[in-house]
Picture 1 (cartoon, helix red, strand yellow):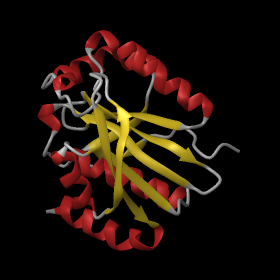
Picture 2 (tube, rainbow, N blue to C red):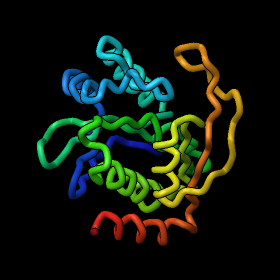
Picture 3 (cartoon, rainbow, N blue to C red):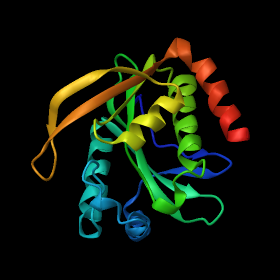
Picture 4 (cartoon, helix red, strand yellow):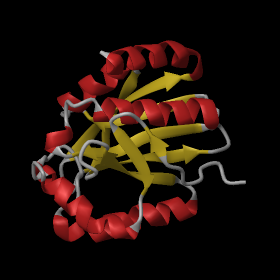
Length: 195
């Protein structure tokens, strides 16, 4: 049996649906909300690259190294981003939550926090993961702060870890939540969402 199988996760503010080819136009609209591809420290596909990005994520899903989702707002029904389980280590029951982006109008609404709560709950309580990782660009202060607010701890920095599309080198900050921390982190996230 495959470690990761497509699943729909539903919350109060958002629904995470398995990525499909027919999400293309809605994802272009979501990425255009804030022209997210212009952020140099992250990798959001330009409209003309969206099809290739969807196909790339679906190919990695077939290979068993990724489970991609789209994020749908409950209030409007519109798609507002993408996220994934990636860098899957089925043998050790570890995943990374990443390749996440959220439309500008959906940022700071509770949607991203709830999506992380749903993904973490599924990872720890259904998949029985021993750890969940998060990685981001050293320069992405917004993402680093959001990961810390989740309750993740910084594991370290991978210096000159990746080459960015513009040719610059990325220092990657690695964070994680381990199984023994999950119950307290879950309570904290639920409390934040309930306020």
